[in-house]
Length: 332
Ligand code: FPP
Ligand code: MG
Image: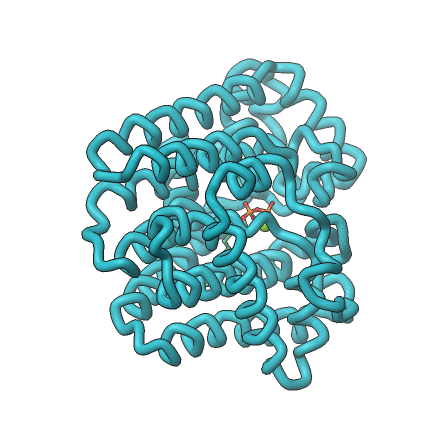
């Protein structure tokens, strides 16, 4: 079982892209983020026999990018509804990672053994279910009916994205279009919801702010898939080559296979840790990782350009651009 920590103080320090945003924003952002953090802890402390695992998962780290996006899209007048939405999106995110680690049989996340690895499949599945339900409890307690609808629709899309990933597993014929559809559902959608919820929490029309979130979510996933190949695990907190080992075909592999016939003919089912590490090196040698990084940066530029129509104040825009840049300038 994960060790229960002693609150936010036991979390790893936040990475530079996140602190750049909090340092640039006025005092309102760190104040609201502290409320999100306290609300997360209060929410998971009610998890009964799973509290230790839940608090351990919360304190294992995480960049809190999604709640920060909620708050940034709400702006300086972000209030209790934005804080509740921030808590809810982070809980859904945590739930999805705990479940994802069960499906991936992943050993490490955020530099620590996953709940799956330390406490087993049953406990990790139950914990993901609990965290997921708690997200809705938080929203319902605030009477945020529209937010419940948005988070519920988002959760359906997360599950659809995960299902697509499983359906496409080990398929070396997977197309870029299939890959991007999956990424949009499993990652873009929750970033989009974070932005929509933030904007709606202050009575604003979501408009193009959802597309901003969706695009940076896609960029986030592209970079995640690069980091899975490039590592290093000391910085990413995850084992290198996990995607290859569980048969997940990602853009770096799709592109690399166009240049390296050995990769094109790869039988992903035959890989073990050693051969997966060798595949990571081969993928890197084709230059595919640079191509994927460039595609991620292009999504970020598109997202930032889309802010022209989003009706955000200049100060708010600066913060949104900073967090967008942080998505592609990170190692974890
Ligand atoms: C991590 O991505 C996983 C996701 C973005 C989504 C996982 C979704 C589910 C398991 C569906 C169930 C969802 C709910 C709402 C409980 P990744 O596997 O690409 O990244 P990783 O390298 O961090 O594992
Ligand atoms: Mg995974």
